[in-house]
Image (cartoon, rainbow, N blue to C red; front, side):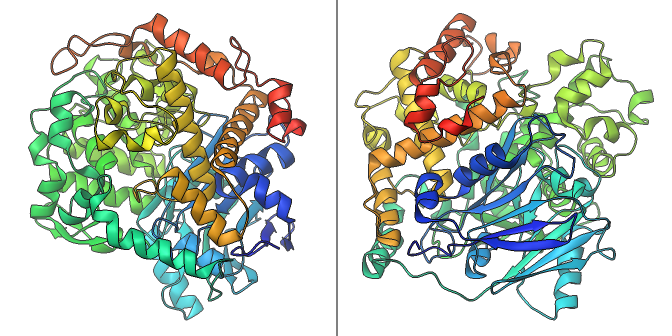
Amino acid sequence: MVQGLANKILRVDLSSNRTWVEEPDELFYRRYLGGAGFIGYYLLKEFKPHTDPLSPDNLLIFALGPLTGTPMPGGSRNSIGAKSPLSGGIAKSEVGGHFGYELKRAGFDALVVQGRAPRPVYLWVRNGEVEIKDAAQLWGKTVLEAQEAIESELGERNVRTATIGPGGENLAAISCIMTDLRNAAGRGGLGAVMGSKNLKCVAVKGRAIPQAADPEKYREMARWMNTNYMSLGNAAGMHDLGTGTAAGMVGGNLTGNLPVRNWSDGLFEGVEQITADAVRDTFRVAMEACPACQIRCKKVVELENEFYKVDRRNGGPEYETLASFGSFLGIDDLAAICRANELCSLYSLDTISLGGTIAFAMECFEHEILTRADTGGIALRFGDAQAMLKVIELIAHREGIGDILADGSRKAAQRIGRGAEEFAMQVKGVEFGMHEPRLKQGLGLVYAVAANGADHVSGLHDTLYTQEGRGMEPIRSLGFLDPLPANDLGAAKVAMVKSEHLWRMFSDSLAVCRFVPWTLRQQVDLLRALTGWDYTDVEALKQGERVATMARTFNLREGLTAADDQLPKRFFGPTPQGALQNTAIDPAAMDQAIRTFYTMMGWHPVTGVPTQERLEELGVGWASV
């Protein structure tokens, strides 16, 4: 038994209406840890290769980390994973809020769902017990409507939920799972996997409080972070200025980081209308936080005018959403962006992939690949906020052009043809996070090689490590002493990219938020204080490597190859204006960086297949392709 954990995994088979509990041994927990580690293990161990992501045999895994459910800043996150209907490979998404916190207190470290219910259901997990309950009356409801109906039926307040809306029910491959109404497990189409199982919601409530092996040390570290966070990283900007994750959009526009019109441009004239400061000064009514966190990075907006009404219960737009529905679509109507964000929360749609897919469609329309006959009369042009909102509705309900766009830009381009593929800006079928790889070329490498597609939180952001100063401290703790240019793709930069990627995969197993500025050493100390293990930094990075290599192995087994580790051609040319008008990624340098990354990971330098020796070294020799 591991101190600080529930030591129980809840299993549910919806096809047979059966539930059971597994109690893994300590070695299992130490080897896979939680979060992303659990997802990689279950998908490789129990998933039949080449199974359709929307079949009953896919696994939907809600995986907590060791810290989840404990009163530790940044420790409320959890991972959700499955085989992705968007990429055909692994889907892994981290999400905050109270859901994971409550699931741990309900007595479980993870929930693994398989099968398909014959009719809509939801799960009610409370204090070590689980019920499969009828959800026929919930099907078709928005996430907010479902939350209200469940609490009314159960006679409980503050029930924590992971829910899908019409987007997930209609199996949109860009749908997500919403926790507590406003937190999105966004990437990879997890909402469609949940919908394919006829599973509307997982509702949880618990009261067990995990006890740390060294409670005084654990409390001391929590007090330290709550006292010092304002002087660390960018936490002060998120908290003090009330801008959350969207601080610096004007600066991003000047440096070229802000994406504009489907990555086709480098400067957005209306940026000041859509910044976090603009949100703060207009529609923002509060800043909220995950449990035990003082940073309070989550915006809450509310508005009602002659055009839009936005309910504060549905949260507010963070940076990725302000960019994906703003500059990325050429839109500077902040009220419309807030409404689009609310629709995504209600319908369970990933704002990043949705914005990327609409941008793709807008560019197709601008190039007359799509016409009004295709769009149902909508003039789907950059800058048209009303067109954006109409298409969101169509995508959620798979109506008209929305039926083609609901599965993301890659599949839409394949269906449309006529050269549309040129405008589908994705890797492995997954649209990009809103950070420019022509500026941050090490991040571009991560976009290319990350198992779950173009994920902006899977590795370093180069601009943090380009000059001497306090900003270098996190990477110096990994052994990198010298700053490197943001556009460097040499072996030293690849080594830096690899090491931070492994750190992020460890963090996603620990399930700790990257916005709470814990160092790697502090994360290890937290784990030691919680579990009593003699854990080390070396073991932490090996855990990150284990996660990355298991995910790579899963993708290869499902048919993905090194050919899928490629950026769209657009990034190999400069932007027509802005800071990057003379900057592009060198395709030969990127190709060499990818091969160097493979080699450093112990994968074949051409195919990217992990060697058996490296799998054995990581303790997962059973997981060979």
